[in-house]
Amino acid sequence: MKIKVLIVFLFCYLSANEVRPGLSAWFSSYELSYAGGGGLFFDSNGRDINLSECSDKLFSTSYIFYPASIQAQSVSISLPINDKVLNTSINHISYGTFKGYDENAVENGNYTSSDTWLKLGYNQPIKNFASRFGFSNQIYISKLENYISTSIYSSIGFIWQISKYKLDIAGAINDVVLYKNNLMGNINSMNFNIGICKELTYLPMKISIDCRLNNIFIPVDYYISGIFKISEIFKLNIGTSSRKFNQNTRQSLSQTIFGSTGLGVVYNNENIIINYGLYFYGTGGFCNGLDLTVSF
Image (cartoon, rainbow, N blue to C red; front, side):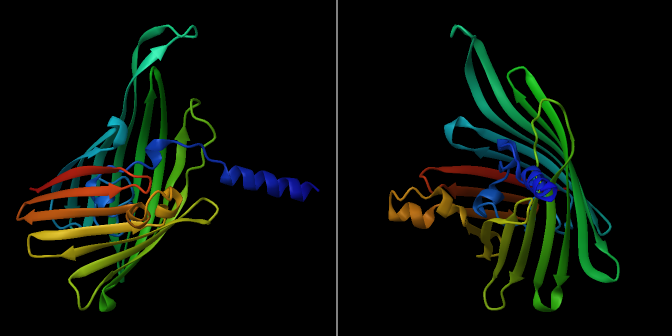
């Protein structure tokens, strides 16, 4: 009997999770166009751990427009140091301004709600083995009216690069809680991501397939995304995910097909990269964003 109680207690502890929107927010137009996938593609403004190589010093900023006047902004710098890459970024999402009321339903002014991430990431190759490993530490500051909660998260990942087959295989452990203050509930946000990325032989295209698992190793979402090279200066990003089935309201065939689907256009001219991305919800509606990256 004691063993059964212990198993139940352990399962409840591992699976318990308080919903915090900042953990699943997207901060770059690349994430929108990949429909949340593309874990092996380079994205300096994304919140997830970045394992890709970077040959140039990059400054990047992004602006994302969500429905209901929710907006997200990011600014980041990527610095290659020999064969190592250092990435730092600030991600901020504002949920808007709301009217406040006291216990007697009397209006007492406006208040705001927002989440802010301060991220420091690093990756480097492993000598004598065609692979890279990396990690990122993130300070998460969540604000609701006058209440502020702070926590620290860490992520670690590994990528194996098989150049003979133009294939990359990667895995990551995301959002391990290192610190949380008393204003936060019991949060177990840790999740896993595994993915493969293949450069096609007969098409100018890279395809990435990702699977995200929860903290008890149960698959939650599947993603497929790609980068199609149109010319030397234009690329097309596309992506879709299994979220289309969770978001599907069976309102129309088009929402079923195009739900949870992303699309983006990339303009790359020497030292300037501009990306515009769209993400279509299965429930109808969309969000869009713009990224600007400058090499220096």
